[in-house]
View 1 (cartoon, rainbow, N blue to C red):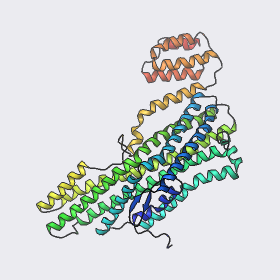
View 2: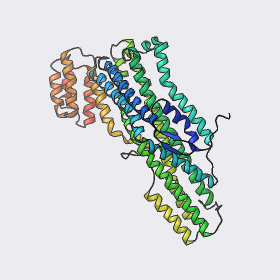
View 3: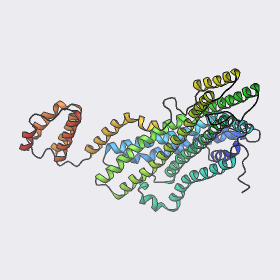
View 4: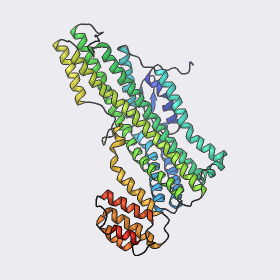
Length: 463
């Protein structure tokens, strides 16, 4: 396959670059042969057209998702799903503006990676650019085809939209185009960030291999670099400069993409919660079949958000792991090698550089790592409270008194001292408290550590 020829790093990003320029997401012109960037009049015109198109599609999309406010009889489900969808829509609109603002910074990011590839080639390590090019082509083709698949489905198979319950949201071509445009922007943003993280991981891994190749990292290994002191010093300085350039590249990546994914993560988190609530609500209440299909469709769309977040988190964790491994490798070289004082001084200087300038994929609020999934446990009480509200908001009550007893349970959760009064008042009417409500109150009592009320057994026998 002679058309899959890639000799430099800029050849590997050509599929994503051409797709993003053609679909009005990227607005700078890159000269791949000269490795320069500029912004032409065509780029400015494309940015103006993209801005007008995104504003128009956002207005159509926001009007379309107003139907979320009247989908079900639960205010919590309607408002929550609507708010999460609005947040995702506004995020998608701001991505082209952010890319236009950081167009030259993105080029500097890619130029640094290309220069690192050239320096690794001098050290005897090569990057398989052809494999990266094939991966980028397949990746872009798959994700860009998803929005066009949505448009083709609406145009040639409208019955499928009605079957899944989306006909109430996307009633015309304009609202469907707005949804496809939002999905297209998210897919291209994911392509840029994922392929860049893969390249960063590859270059950090090759840097660690270069250190292990020229210097001993254990008792058994021997240094393959045998030379005088000046040549060894120059080699260490070359490795240090390469690490410094990669560290600057990570900082540029954090500036261009990390904050975007931080916003996308919390928007997807909110959409996940309320999509799950919508699914639970559709199966616990009497709703139409279209509503149940729409709840399942929301979960499928939520799976796309979850895939983006988990993929970004996995790649960022791998990059952070390779960055941490560089520090370990240098410390092993200092521990197991026997060097002259000048060489040892260069190694210690390199070690200090690593300790003061350790690159991490971060949004400056938290690091993107697997630990983030179980560090957000502070949100679990919020989810529990929302689930309880949803449960009691739409639980079928037989009487007004049953609804009052349900409200009383929330007072018991936050103020356990009212529990005795609740049981005394509920014992006057046998139908006011369903058995499942009493069981939940007992659970709340045990969780609060207050024990059972004094007259619990007597009042239970009366009821």
